[in-house]
Each structure stands twice: as structure tokens, then as C-alpha cells.
Amino acid sequence: MDTKKTRKYTQKTIEIDSTISSGEHGEATKAKANASVETGEEAPISVGTLRAEIRAGLKPYEDSLDSIKNQLACMHKGISSDISVLREEAKADIKATRDELMGKVEQLFTMQAEAASTQKEMEKSLSDTTDRLTTLEKSYMSLKADYKKLQEKCTDLEDTSRRQNIRIVGVAEGAESNNITGFAAKFLAEVLGADNFDSPIVIDRAHRSLISKPRSGERPRPIIVRLHYFTEKEKILKLSRNKGNLHFEGSPVYIFPDISPEVGRMRATFNQLKQKLRSANIQYNLYYPAKLVITANGSRYTFTDAQAAEKFILSNKLITSEDETE
Image 1 (tube, rainbow, N blue to C red):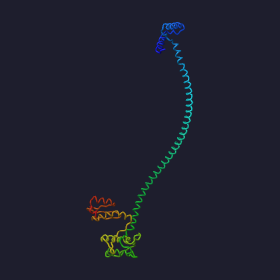
Image 2 (cartoon, rainbow, N blue to C red):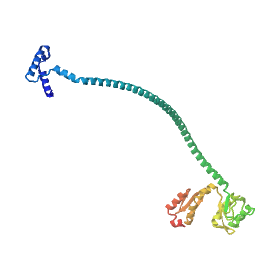
Image 3 (cartoon, rainbow, N blue to C red):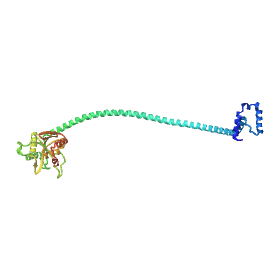
Image 4 (cartoon, rainbow, N blue to C red):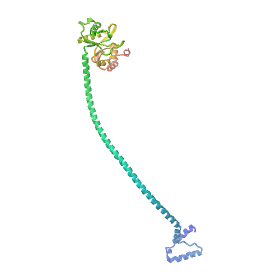
């Protein structure tokens, strides 16, 4: 039967009064159907017939549906079983991981506690060390000041013990023979002039500088002479400055006051500057222990530092570039 006609007949059948389905009108319905067949018209299909046909058509699908339901039930049961197994395995893994992490966390807490304790000990030690260092710095500054005072005092005492000494430089080795004290007296009288002394020069002792004896061709050792009277020492140094260049047996000799090595190093810092001042004909004096006094333009300028003195000279143009070249 054509689908469109079936729908048409179905619609007509549904439009029939609901009483058609009752037992009272069953025969009337059949009669009308037969009449329709006899007349050649298509008889309408009842709802019950349609339902029966639909059920018959759906019968194979219902069987397949039952089979699918059974398969789905089996699959559901298997999946549920697998999920249960996976859940138990996951729980076991999570528990093992949790136990492992808890152990690691406990180790971390222990290490952190030890580190905190160590840090506190280090902070305390550092604080104690800082306090001790501060105390040591204060002690060092105090000791440094005391050391400087003691050094200056020792230097002064050493120079005081040398205040009656003179240093003779340039005398050849062996010129004194075996009597260096008598040689020193004779040397001073000969070089400075015997007529400059009212009485023989009194010398307590004399000796060569206490360094290794030089080899042939090397500079001879200085002679240290201790005079009995300080006034004679001052007189000898004055005569030496006034005479200028001194010679003994054809060689130049020099007479200096005997000073300590510390004062000698302090005075040596002015050596180059003194040479420049002499070249420029600028008057200067070097006083004990190492104080340079420059006389220029009618004024006296005192310096204890060679660099400051040179800076002053250059800034005031006391020395020209030609003087420095010379």
C-alpha cells in the first residue's frame, strides 16, 4: 500500500468518532469496509490494525534491542569492574605517593629546623664576632696611637744619643790604619783648618759604619765620629757648610750630622726638591727631624711633606721649566 494513501486513510480513521473502536459498532465498521471494497473504494484502516502492523514491524527491532541491552549490560558490568579495579589501584598509588611525600616533607621539616638552628647559632657567633671586632678596632686605634708616640720617642732618643756624632763620607778604606780615633782628629784639623780650633779636638770614639766591607771599586764605608763636646760638633758642621767642597788626599769628602735611619728616610724625600732649589738659587734650610723651610719673596714657608712643598713651589712659579730641566 502506498505510504501517502496509508497516511490519508489513517487520518480519516482517526477522525471517526471514538466509538468506532467499541464492540457495539464493530459490525457496522466491517460492513462499511466491505461496502467500500465492493464499490471499489479503499477502505480506511483502523487504529488497532495500524498498531498491530507497527508492532509486527517493530518485532525484529525489539529483539535486536534486547540483544543490545544485554550487550550494554555486560559492557557496563565489565566497565564497572574495571573502574573498581582502577579505583583501588589509584587509591593504592595515591596512598603510596602520599606516604612517600609525607616522608619527604618530614625530612624537609627536619632539615629546615636544623638550618634554622644553625642560622641562629651563626647569627649569635656573627654578633659576638662583630662585638669582638669592634673592640679589636678600638684597641688597634689606641695601640696605633701609642705605637706612633713610642716610635717618635724612640727615634728622638736615638737621635739624641747621636747628637754629638758626625758622619764622614768619602774617605778611602784603610786610610785610618789602626788608629781611627787619631785619624779622625787629624782629618778634621786638616780638612777644616787647624787654626779654626783653639785646642785639639776631643773625640770619644770613632768607627766605620757597621756594614760589610766593600770590594775594590765600591763606595767606602762612612766613618762615625763621636765628639766629646756638642759645641765642637756644631762648630765642625758650620765650618763644613762655610767651606763648601771639601777634599782629602785628592778625593771629595763630606761631613754630615749623624742621624737615625728613620729620620734619614724622612729627609731623603726632600733630596730632589733640594737639588731643584739649589739650581734655582732659592734659600732653604732642613731642620730636625725633617722640616724644610723655604725663604722666598721675603717670607719663610715651612713644609713637612715633599709633595706639598713641590706643589707650592710650582704654583708660585719659584722654579721655572728651565730650572727643572737643568
